[in-house]
Amino acid sequence: MAYLTTNPADKERFICVYPVYLNSKKTLAEGRRIAAEKAVEHPSCSEIKDVLSAAGLNVILENHMHPREWNRDAQFRGRVRVQLKQEDGSLCQDKFTSRKDVMFYVAEMIPKLKTRTQKSGGGDSNSQQADGGKKNKKKKK
Image (cartoon, rainbow, N blue to C red; front, side, top):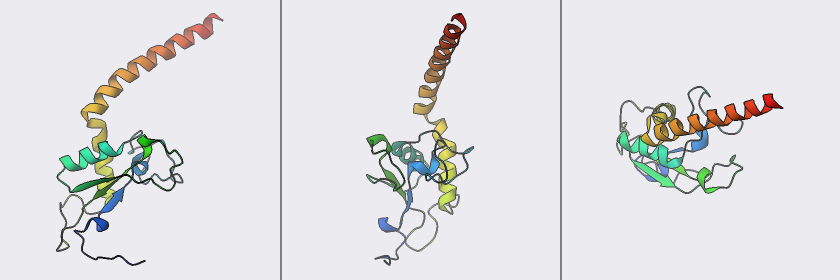
């Protein structure tokens, strides 16, 4: 079906960014769109929205699922629509010329979010301690 509008400023013409596009735990077949080394572990829609809003882009959060996402949990739901072009066809921001530029930028910025740095710092130390405890138990047996 043809687009109902050709105006780049209409929200139907915004690009879609699903969290699965940036998820390092997904394969290309499961929907990841960027290299695994550059991708982020389990990004959320709210994180993507926060990063792009802070970058000054026009962002809309929608409650849609990626077709290849088999998990129906709320944390895997959602997509972010991003405006790349203005009504006259010019770019909103020169550093974002394509959807790949947006995805690479988001994947680079999500690990720097305060919520990520606080979560990962505490989580890593706890998991390392737990692993160490398990290893010692195995050696005793």
